[in-house]
Amino acid sequence: MIIGWALGLLSVLIASFSQILLKKAAQKEQKNFLQKFFNVWVICGYILLFGSLFINTFVLRKLELKFLPCITATSFFWVLLFSRIFLGERPSKNKIIGIIMIFIGVIVCQF
Figure 1 (cartoon, one colour):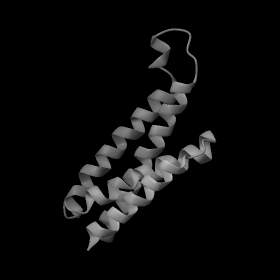
Figure 2 (tube, helix red, strand yellow; figure 1 turned 180 degrees about the vertical axis):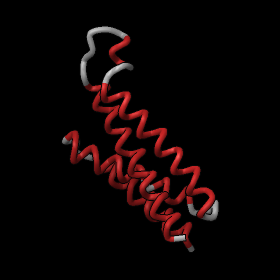
Figure 3 (cartoon, helix red, strand yellow; figure 1 turned 120 degrees about the vertical axis):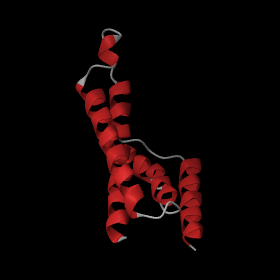
């Protein structure tokens, strides 16, 4: 069961980081329409996202179904944290309150 939790968290971290890569790609101005979709940031982001989905499928075999949504819900925290670290974005008060509510919900789901 510990392996399932660890892999679930790894999957969420990979998916969250892929969202940061896609956001970074969206912030860059591209010369033409195709460069918006065929650049290093976007391709790496989607490769990581599909890798995350593959790990998630494996996790579904190791954990009870009721736990995976709780693990996946933490992705909002990781995206906020990675946005702060890699993109220098400052979270608003509403986002911080939302993250706190999500963690309260995750804790309630476990009991």
